[in-house]
Figure 1 (spheres, rainbow, N blue to C red):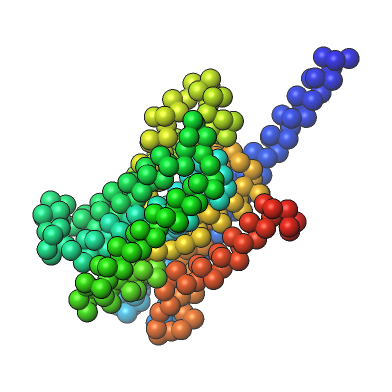
Figure 2 (figure 1 turned 120 degrees about the horizontal axis):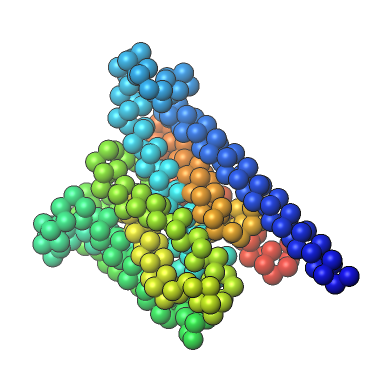
Amino acid sequence: MRPAALRSEQGGSTRAEGDRSFLARLVIAALAFALLVTIVFSLAAGASDASLVSAITALLPGDSDVLSLRDSIIIYDIRLPRIVLGALIGASLAVSGAVMQGLFRNPLADPGIVGVSAGAGLGAVSVIVLGGTILAPFIAIFSFYALPVAAFFGALVFTLILYAVATRRGQTSIATMLLAGIALGAMALAYIGLLTFLADDRQLRDLTFWTLGSLAGSNWPKMAAAGPFIVSALAISPFLARGLNGLALGEASASHLGIPVQRFKRIAIVVVAAATGASVAVSGGIGFVGVVVPHLLRLIIGPDHRYLLPASALLGASLLLLADAVSRTIVAPSELPIGIVTAAVGAPVFLWILLRRRGIVDL
């Protein structure tokens, strides 16, 4: 009876895993289709209307010649680079959040909340304000890539400090992590405030809009500067799935599974720093995407990072494009900073996550 019962239990577990795997693949396919629809909608939305037909035509190979000169300029030179960059940034923020949550083994970890984005912002603001003086040699070395490189190093340093402070004997304290993130964020904010005080009028305008988060001014050169960092991080992220799944069982169990835990952590930290740094360098502070997207998907498809990471990338890209479309149209012809839109939606969801973890609200 015992072997039969054991086989029955194993069979039920296998079927449940198969059902969850099928659901995850179905969700990923639906999210991919939703992203395509969102891209078409974003191409057509804005202060200067371009028809949905023109937006669809722009995405079809060989049909771009039928567009009018006006629509061609609006779509190819203004909106398409903004949409491509926005999709990459949304995907990178969501994937960074999922990786950090797996690394710290806590669903509240997020580059924006724990101070990693503040480190990236610190590096970027330093280049914007001091690029013509103290950091002129840095600009001379990295040239066009100076801003994303500075943001990357800022995010990397803050991530390493955060990990060192919050982790003791292989265990990461969520309370220490959040408090350390608050402290690091306050330090970065103080330095950014000092640089803002020292900035001239042109730099001050750039910093004000950049701090609130925006995709305004996105173009193909910016895409060329930040894109390689983001694309590289997103390309590496699927290879982190096995290690993140192993860490969910604990570091000792992960080591028994043959995962080089310490080396894996270092790689994951570099990936998060690259993705967050490049994103923040271009778009400024955009909060809550990294914490809300992975958490919601984890409720639907489960914690398996083989599916969670690609699903997070797709949903993060779609949500940021929708937020950008809202920011471009809600006060047209002016433009609302995208960080305001994401915060208005993400903050209540984050509070719901906190209350749910305390058992105050039900799913």
